[in-house]
Image (cartoon, rainbow, N blue to C red; front, side):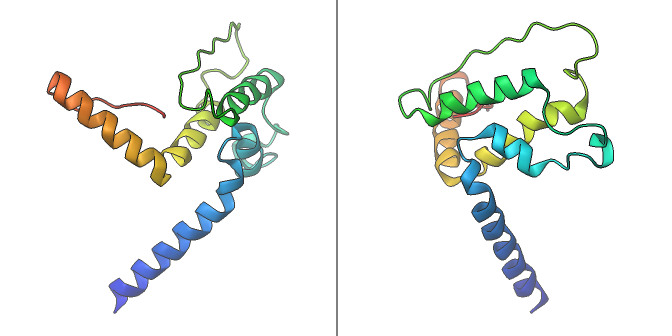
Length: 132
């Protein structure tokens, strides 16, 4: 009985998360603005992503919103100096959080599974397929 209640709560939580995050499916900037606790905790001095981070997240979002490029790799490079937040774990969490959420969706699980099977067949090793 307790296990069933736990399972039901887990399903409800998952459904709620999917419903709340669905609008950000192709919008990493919107996801970062909504999900991270700007102005509190480790982000107490931050009102949102920095301008260069916004630009990069917007570029990635445009790539994902285009059905012709959505499932193709995108190459992004950022040249930077000291102190702009590229190595801070909280700052890098934007991309990690967005990618993790996207990889949990069913259409990406199917694609990752197919790529993983191809990698195993080709190399004999389980290789992470990355994002779809």
